[in-house]
Length: 297
Image (cartoon, rainbow, N blue to C red; front, side, top):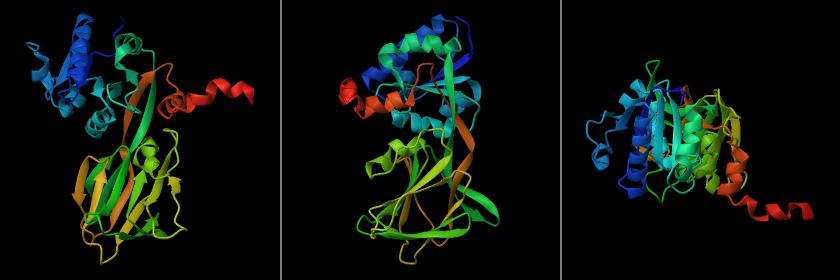
């Protein structure tokens, strides 16, 4: 096998027997094929392998050429937020349910991975969002997100009143239960569940989607991903929570303006050569149900 990657990181975060089994199988296969391997230190003990090179996700990002994330999309989201700071390619092995980011089936792991490691793969360069304050003319980063940034009241009974500016121009007043700001990657996540559109991953756009707005005229808006979104909060909203990918939560200082824009960092997601986003959608959303009857119409 031609080694297009010299050092490979194995990332997982789970005690599920299936994931540990896949990690162990992958480790021995890579080792037998001459790769340098770094194992996520959160799973090292569960693998029960002697003299293993291990480290955290930051260490893998610095040292490895490829990160293989095993689990579901939740594992991928957590790993990518860190790996996006490094020049590393990322691939996901799906041991979960939906798997929009982890698209290699663990049952076909060795066959598909062998092709990828031989250099037969597709690379997608996808952008992240970042939320930040501007203090004394400098950015103070709150967090970043692969799927979406969600703003809502920390009090579930309260609505939030947000003035939304896009590129310094007033756009709309968001009087609703919350606001989702999503990437195309995140269009199949939370925003989809409340009626947002599916956006193909490489479209350079950001979507703003009010959650249960208190006006019938409120609608989703899609803007270019070079735009800067500024959010101003009502004086009555002093307990607003920001959530990034439903994994990282903060209570905002709503006396300050909050800014959301594309991050300068990207992540490099790789797929098998036969990867087809629309095929993935058909499979995950059961669009194939009536496909065999297509020629009857």
